Amino acid sequence: MWGQLPYIAKLEKAGIPTVLIDLEDQHEMVKQEALAAGVPNIRYIPASRTIPGPEDVEEWIAPMLEMLTRPLTEKEKESGMYTPAQDRILFEGTLDEAQEFYQQTRIVPEPLNAPISVYTDGLPIIIPTEERVKEMLKGTSHKPEELITYQSDRGGRFDRSLNKGDVVRFQPRLFTATVEKVAVNAVMAGCKPEHLPAVLAIAESGVQTGTTVFNNQWMCLSGPYAKEVGMNAGLGMLGPGNPAGMAIGRAYQLMAINLGGAIPGINRMSSIGSPINRVGLAFAECADKLPPGWKGLNEEFGFKKDDSVILVMGTEGGLNGAQFSPGGYRALQKSGHGGMARKLGVKGIPGPHNWLDWILPDIWVGEREGGRIFIMVHEMAKHLYDIGYKSKGEVLEYIWKKSFEPLKKYRDRSWVDLTTNGWLGNEPQSGKPWKELPDDYMVPAGGDKPDSSCIIVCGSDEEICFEITGSVRGMWGSQPVYSIDAWR
Amino acid sequence: MAEKDQIYRCLNPVGIELPVKTSPLAPRLDTLDGKTVHFSITGEPDITIALDKRLKADYPNVNWTTKKSYTPMPVQLSEEEMKTTDAVILGVCW
Image 1 (tube, each protein chain N blue to C red):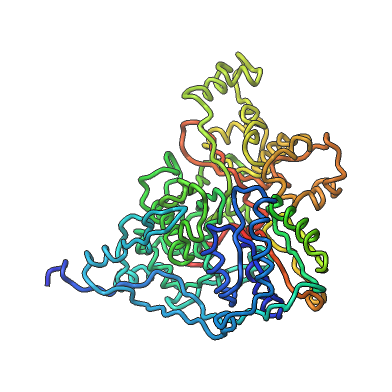
Image 2: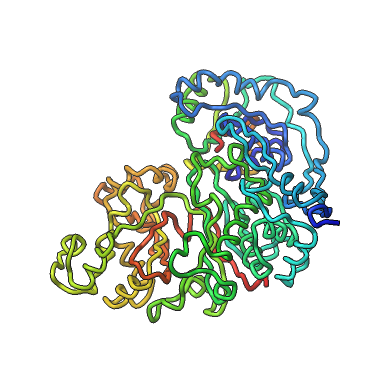
């Protein structure tokens, strides 16, 4: 909850009475975070999601203020230690009995009102017997009892910095985990021991799940490890069928459930959920087919070409792609035929042509502003190289410049009230206050900087560019690339 | 023993919940009149603008202070400000 509950706890502990206004469907999340912050009995009152503000306030302003003066109950005066029991062995029995046990569900009340699995994503799992977990742990040199900590300085997240050696607190319940706990989840996901370093690197991210927004959790592997474990970086890499990709992707979601304590309808409030998160999504970039001079994700984020890393993302927004009809893209590039050639004004002229002009700046129309992750096949990357873009950075600069639009138009977007903090601060490009800028001032809809966006090249041949809304340098997230090698 | 009847010890996948030292709530005020009450605004202007107006109009005997963020992250009181603040309302939490 973005630091609200720790702040409330700080005030209460300092002797300042507080009252919190929340939304009714988020009471359970408030209670969980209040407990984690050490003030389990905080007073809160719900506002409405639908009633207009003035009418809504009329309903609860008096009882809200009364919460600041009504004497404390005996329970509210209590102090002590909350020490939950946590057994290493969760179940003993046959494999069939264990499968039934791990498949247990709970009914989560409105607004969900359906059974939700307690320990799994709803599908059967590989039962994490002691023997299987011991075998899984052979995939890393780290000790089973070692706590998951940051392996490098991570930059800031919210109001705190995350430094090497700090214990990772898993979202949203702020649990911690050992290497063994991660291995248990890896077994459940169907991972093999050689997958464990990637799963541990994912664990280092804290496996966040977002709160009320449309949050997509996905991962892209970069470096030689991906090939070592058989990740698919070619045709269908975002789809099913590849054991390493499926298991590593699923491990994220199982860790979110078990290590993070994320429960739909309780503290994972994405309104309709995202299909990306249904089982989990991990894939690999195809560094072998990068155009000359273009760098892989590992080098882009400060690692070496032979370093193995994983980009762990929680992007908030839509998914778009498959813009090109079968043969439509090829007709443009081979001979300048078809609709794409007409739009670009190159009818009858063979390529290579800048196909980005066919999708820009329209990808920001009707969608949120900010960065995009462009997943494109190698042939399309090569066409960009052939027309002069000798690095990803040059392409990203071009994309970013195409995103500029008048401030008058930019103001009509939805997220901008939030990302500009109500237009209270300064516009990043000019450094001038937002409120002093004229309507025709040009603002980049593509994020504050060109590298708000990112390019991932894949190895398939059928021409497609897929865009995921979101930035690799988000406004509240820390640096999103984690070393796999650190967890070998 | 048939494999299907073998008994296995199965490990707990759930994260470690750290022990928490729990604290009582701060004593409540005997009255709001004459007190300094701070409204920490975190987004949802449809609600917070209306509430801010009502607080100031309906409770004129309270010394109201505010800090505003359009984001969910509150702008916190300084240590000095905390010394002169009697109560805090925070919202909307999301």
